[in-house]
Image 1 (spheres, protein in one colour):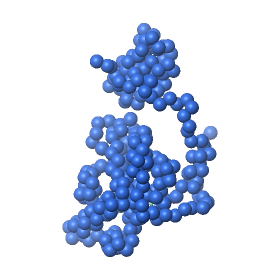
Image 2: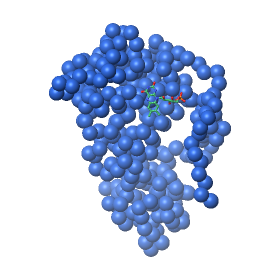
Image 3: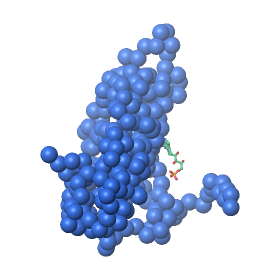
Image 4: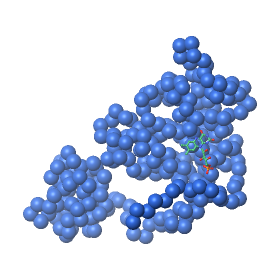
Length: 275
Ligand SMILES: Cc1cc2nc3c(=O)[nH]c(=O)nc-3n(C[C@H](O)[C@H](O)[C@H](O)COP(=O)(O)O)c2cc1C
């Protein structure tokens, strides 16, 4: 049976890099060689596999030879990331076309690499990838709102009025006419999930970056969160999400607006160096 952490004695140079990089000290040097001493501490981050200079480590059946080599890999420059961050915009007008499914699949696969607290990796990406599926979600959304009864309380006006306009096809304040939507959720009941809401938000931010890089525009869908707070059965009845499950949603689609220039902000974040 293959162990969690296997070292090829012929190629291991006993440098201890894997042991030093182990965040929770699951690995130990013993008789000059690394070994898995406390598997219960291991969070399967694969740092040991990634850091080994000679590729001697096989982790959880994954061989070094099958990992992506870092050397020579094109990575975004500081200029490129900075330019993107200075010019990225929230899209409120989407083109009436679907995004390419293959590109979307690629983005969602890559998104699985976004970091999660304690490497819990308990995210679900629920995706409405087409205009047809998004329209189906809009219909379900409206019918949940129409069925909603919270005692005798009516829906507040900020929610009821735009919901009526959405039902009539007049405008779509909630979903901005997007051709697609990604709902990122984190199973808060899964073992080892320490930071579900942070994990969700980090994935959404990376989705925006990946999508924009592929020419797909995005908009954070804060309204869905606000509506869920008012109508707690909403996502349970539309996508089967428990009421307690942390989530956030991103609208996406081909852009219908092009921005010619970046933003001039009057107030940036306060930068507070302490040394
Ligand atoms: C967490 C979050 C929630 C948001 N929710 C919405 C939303 O529901 N609808 C919308 O049109 N814009 C939404 N936005 C977009 C913000 O209004 C926008 O980021 C801000 O005005 C700055 O504009 P920019 O993103 O184009 O730079 C949201 C942004 C964030 C970060």
